[in-house]
Length: 116
Length: 113
Image (cartoon, rainbow over all chains, first blue to last red):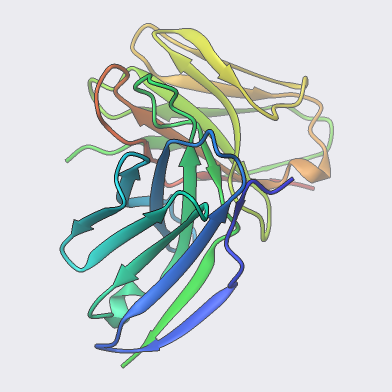
């Protein structure tokens, strides 16, 4: 039972344009969402997160949007750069008022390729 | 800045052998998480420790055990290895009680032959 789903296995974008990566979840108890970037043979690198009490969080070129009613979140990267090419994982946490954000349920990942 | 250190980076074992993976968290991080990522799959949560006590358990086989030591490093012990145990094993650490995300190590690639 895949509780966090990234339905697009891959995305190809031209340098300078916007990359939009999507993620859906089924467990309405999830209250914290994160995006990780992963290069081959390396561990996931934290990018940006959002609490369920917010609908948007921005950090430089990265913005995450959360639509709780639709159980959907998206990561926008603008402008996209060739160095952004990697696998992007959406992850969700059931924090339940605690403070631990490390027990994560991951999506399957989306391979982003940014062409020069 | 210091990151999560995992050792070894690569490990090759035969079926039915045992393996021990080590994880050294970021300094001052008191919580450690273990994940398993099979080929073409997303990382799956195995187990976590906070202050040397198991804090949560996921899809960890009974053949595996783990512990966290007084210096907060953690070891994942895997016995009676099977071919299906071949995967990337990630450790992550965070600071419990603080508003921090989990930071991952580079992983240990275990190959069972």
